[in-house]
Length: 529
Image (cartoon, rainbow, N blue to C red):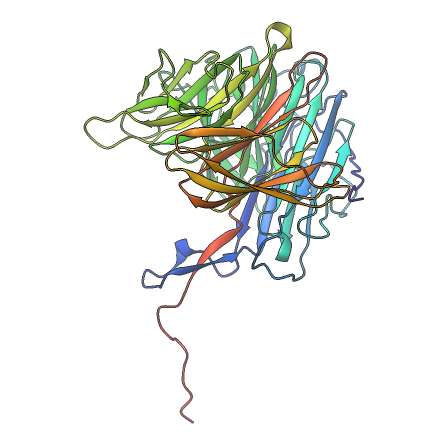
């Protein structure tokens, strides 16, 4: 039984960001000499992940699942994988996960932005230096549950055989209050630039961006928000200091006096690197984590719109110097169509555009494809996200799907259950073939794989395979075998009391390998003695 005990000490008053990195010792192909020969792909040797503090609500429960897939070509050498608690700097931040919707005053000394002194704030401990979710072998997930409030953010590393494709997922259920719903997120990589279309500074939403610094020196990040008319006026300092190995939550409505729904947040690391994620809580429609959009691109894919979505709101931002004119298509089970009344979208440079697509899927699963409209001049890059609602009236629940990059080789979604998991695969161009593997369960069983062909211009929504005789949460890995690009997401449903609670996680490539160039010449020195 691969279930560990998660001992959480101290009360954390806000959620934290997620971040991670994968690196091969010796550098990557981006650092290669231009004269180098064709690169060889090798497994990464070290990965770093950070997981958000899930909730401080007394009516919340969280499942953590960690997993590293088995890979051909990875030597069975030593390695470790586990996580430790991060420091929390959140003394002046309204609580986004409390059952009363966060009754603390937003207007504290730091404008609701947490510690700014680079070192003060409460430290949360979680069993000292004993790692959480340590893996014993690739291909076998471990899981643990936490049923109390105050779980801290977690910072972890994996090396050796556990590094390639290491994945950690947390899934939180909040039974009541303004944060009511199912909130899921995968721990992701640190970077220096993040885009979050779909955030809000409106009074009906509490959106926190959670910034985590995985390193041993302080980092500094700039936050900028863009609305339908351009950048929103800043009411306070937009530069945030994140102390070493710490997390700082920032309430977006404290950054500006302007109230607007459907805006875009940019997080830029001025020094160091950070992880960033947004937790959005709607007073009526629950909430979820909003992952960062894929990097700006002239064509984007938003995979996995549920077939029973009662509403879908598309938010797009054009970060470049040119306006973007986009075709809007829905890739369904059989072909791609243009949503009636939403054939195209014009996005002005430096501005955010939003359109309500209603029940765009009409009872069939689909994915949104945004491509250049055409015309004179080069196409303009965009970032995008979709806010999806299921249910009606007081039984609504919300999730977010960002624009998601293609799976170059493989991607994994951890924490799948015996019921309620839906895997969406979309081939925006040519037909593609993929292999989907269900790992062993956390409490036993054997992996099972199936191969699927996804026709170009369509979305295939399927129940992923289950492990043979397996019990407990399990992981699902998607490998692209041949054909055109494929994009994917995973929806997890855990309905409760008539509310269709759900969360959707994008599946970008896991970057489990890096390209290492071969030397362009023999640099060895001959000894003439």
